[in-house]
Image 1 (cartoon, rainbow, N blue to C red):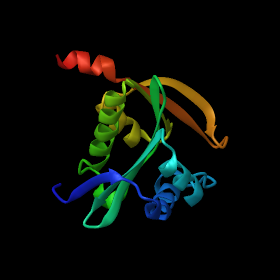
Image 2: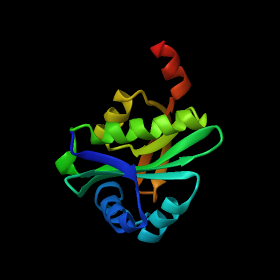
Image 3: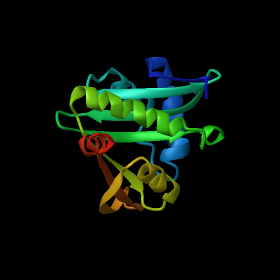
Image 4: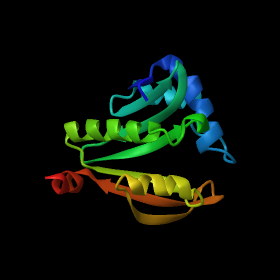
Length: 158
């Protein structure tokens, strides 16, 4: 794990992020996270696009959109070669720490209803199911909405 580097994405990372999104997040769907859209998120002042690199290769990425009172995890993907090594957990912890510093304590996300490994991953980090959206993914697949209240999490640590 010592070789893992987390850092804000650069514009030159956009193509790799978009390709990873197509492969691991948007499989079976029309690509929505194009290189241009990823670049817009990198440039957007209320977004954080985070990369995880391991031995100079892209191991994973996450895109979080921050608002005044809540944040939304748009995407998170980890290359299968790096899964179950703490990459996703480290990225989410980094993004949650940034949210806390900004005074944003509620984080929401959607996950494919059929992606039980991802649902279990988020649940292991304190996210709870808060809704169900039929046909969310292009009418092809349903979504489970999940959320985590970081303020409640911090209170239980005291």
